[in-house]
Amino acid sequence: MSGRPELSVLSSRATQIVSVARELLEEEGRDALTMRALAARLNIRAPSLYKHFTNKAAVESALIELGMAELGTELYRAVEEPEPVSALLRAYRAAALAGPHLYRLATQGPLDRASLAPGLEDWAGTPFFLVMGEPYTAQALFSTAHGITILELDGRYPPGSDLDRTWAEAAHAFELVRTGR
Image 1 (cartoon, rainbow, N blue to C red):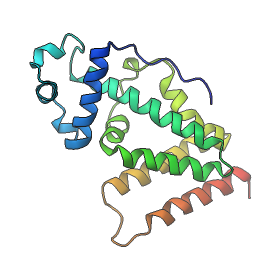
Image 2: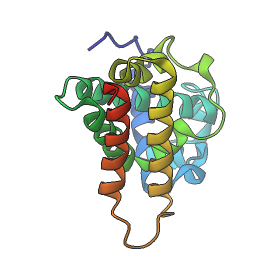
Image 3: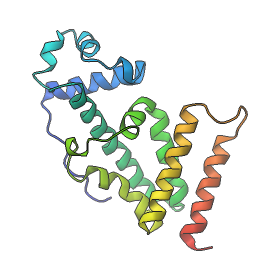
């Protein structure tokens, strides 16, 4: 696995705040992640949070950074598998389903790249390129994975759809592209 960029340095208290923010996010969703709700979970007053984070966006950036680092780690593992396209898509799907609200936070809406550890976004996306060997095909694979993920998370597939087969067919199609068959 290629070396992950160093994440932003957080104090132990800031790390605890991010951990609790993640719990709140996954339990109640993005709209519930407020500085007031976070402070209540930590049994502190909301203004105390501002000693560690300038605002809610800074907490969200720390969460996104953590999510990208975790996802990237899983995707790099998948690259080493015998069927890397299938493994990459399985790892991507598993990460999104395990933390759907963090996934949405990290992938929907504008991304404040300047708030992330330098190089982290590129590092986390590189496994798509390593598997496909071509940047635009790698973007197409990522876009496909993201699209299927969002549709699955939103329950937008028709009732009775075999989503495992949908994912397998996507993997098969990209494997054909990858191998030139």
